[in-house]
Every structure is written in C-alpha cells, then in structure tokens.
Length: 275
Length: 188
Image 1 (spheres, rainbow over the protein chains, first blue to last red):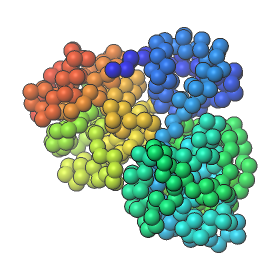
Image 2: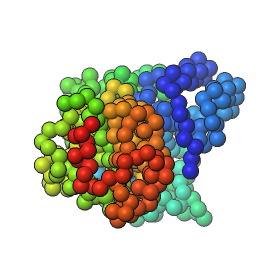
Image 3: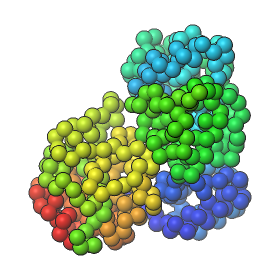
C-alpha cells in the first residue's frame, strides 16, 4: 500500500512559489484540490516522505524538477477518447472546415499526442489533411518529444480500434500504424502538417488564428480565474464562427465568455464562437 | 436543524453496492440538508447510463456534475465515468482525469480525502460492499480531519473485501446495517 502523505495548504503555497521563482512555471491558479493530489503522487513515486525534503530536492536539483514537472502534469490520454465526440466532429464540424482553403487547428494541452493523431486520421478520411495545419502544444517538453515520434504501446491498440469504430470509422484501423514487438509506429505521413511546440496556457499569448481549438480535459486542472483567462485566449484565437471543443465534463456555463459562444453539440461539448 | 448534521455525505461502493445505493436514495426525503455524493466503481468502456438509471428509479434526480459546479444541499451527485471527483475549498467540484486508483476512475479514496479536507467534521464517509481496497485510506483521512465514518456490516455484504479493508484502517468507524443508514444521517 502507498504511504499516506499529509500536506498543509501553506506548504502547497511554498511549493508553488519555489517552482515559480526558480523555474518560471506558474501553478498558482491551478485547481488546488487536484494540484495537491498531484504533488502527493510525485512524493509517493519518488519515496519522499515529507514536504521539507521535497522542497530541498526542488531547490537544489534541476534534474529532479524535470522529472517532477513530467510527473506532476496529467498526461493521461487516448486515441479517439470519447468516440461520440469524434463522431460529432466527423459529422458536424469537419464538413464546415472544408470550406476554408487552409484549415488551422490548435490542440492546446496535447499531452503525448494521441488526440492529435486521431484528428489527423479524421482529416485524412475527409480528404482535408493536405491543406490542414495542426498546431499541437503542451507545457511539457517531454510530452512533445514523445508525440513527435508517434510511438504508442501495442497493448493500447485494441481499445483504440474499438474507439475508432464507435466514432464512425470504417477503414482498417491498423492501416494507420506499423506494429512492432510491443509498440506501434504511427504512419508518419499523418504528422506531416503537424507542428508540435511548447506553449504555456498560463503565460503565453495568442500566436495564430484557428477555425478549431481542441482543449479537452485540460481546463479541469485550473481554477475559475485561470479558466476564464484561458477561455478568453481561445476566444481571441478563434475566427468568427470558429469551433471550440472541451472535455465531456467541462462546461462554459459559469464562464465569462459564455454569451459569446453558441453550444452546437451539448453532449459532445462543442461550441462555436459567435460572429 | 441542529448544526451537527453533515453538510456532505460521500458514499463509496463497488461490487454489490448498487441495490443498497438505490434503496438509500429512495429512502431520502424530498429535501435534505446535505449534498449526497456517490462514487461507484463502473465499467470504463461504453457510455455509462448509470445516472439515468438511478434517476429513473428514484424520486430524486441524480446529477453527474460538470467541473467547477457548486456542491449544493438536497442534491444527489454521481461521480462521472472516467474522472476522479474532488472538491475545492470554495465548495465546487473539481474533476481529474489522472491515472486510475485501485484500477478505478472514479476512485473512492480521492473523493473521501477531499471531502474531509473541505468539510472536516461536517463530512460523513460511507463505505459499502466491494471487492478491492479502494476507500480505506481516504476514509482514514476523512476521519483524521474530524469527519465521521460508517461502514456496511461486512457480514451483510455481497463482497466484504472493501468494508473489511475500511475497518482495518478505520477501526473507530460505525458498523451499520444498510437499512439504518438514512436515519443515521438525520440524527446527530
């Protein structure tokens, strides 16, 4: 059984401050409940028993911080996660994107890229991949490095194939990758027009204009203040009538930008910027 | 109402707990002074209709909360499929898509733990039938924060591993017969 770790709220403040001042990452407006959970998760994984020791490692060992950052942020993702969402994209959003000569899509908080790979497959099947540019960004450089390689565990393919079929896919899913002993290599032509780069939603600004922004299960890790700020950033980064896709349990209901979006698919959490 | 009644009641259950939860919701009055939060282990694959099933069978609507939705009294909440359910100091739900705990997402431990952090002595954690050890550590934390623990009598459980693990970790928990749970929530 894992060690049960107790942390006081003030100790979390101290850790946030160390990371901000020493490494430039600002977690002060992250959701406190989940951030605290992640810090405990890191401590358990590194067998660190108390917060003072954790602070000591953070202050004195930049290499420890790199590991900590990678472990702190949630990088859990899947291909075609929530098939009903991808079905809605296929049926409702992608046909509309087809009217733009160059399609620009932003995956904000792409983790290790599985949702980007899924999007590329949808676009390829719609005959739009050649004229699409996908900007896939994440806070975490290690994630981006992994995503660029397009390598995934072979053991995940059974579930991804089932997801793909439920999303309305009719091709042979295995034609999109090459299977090796225990991993698969995604067909690299799918990633030809994908640019993976580091972007921090907390501190970075608008960098382009998009017809679709996907940011699924990222805002849940932020508090309401930061959620509002990031949603404003998305609003400013969308063309009029551009689409915004959120996670299945993320809502615009309590957010400042709510009146400036229409909900076009409630159950799939797809919104559209008003004109 | 005496002010020692709970403000939040979190129920954790796995295999064998569903009929008990259903009966418990059916026994609730139309309004009650606490938020009732259900964390039930469920299948990962396939869309889950559990909230609809529960709502159809009972007179109280069962809500799967969105992220940052307020925790309100007189409401029954069901932890959404594929998310851990946490609570913030401002009494809003916070969802978390991180790794499964005890092979489960939602898991019971994180919900008990954060209910204890936020509601302290006004939190009640209830552990029902189940076949793994999820909930025990979280319940211990909830009690350490001043909250109250109820555990279904293991001899009355279809699967006793979960309540037994809970009792091993929280020996001071009150052992309850399922039919008495609702009454206990209304008597300080």
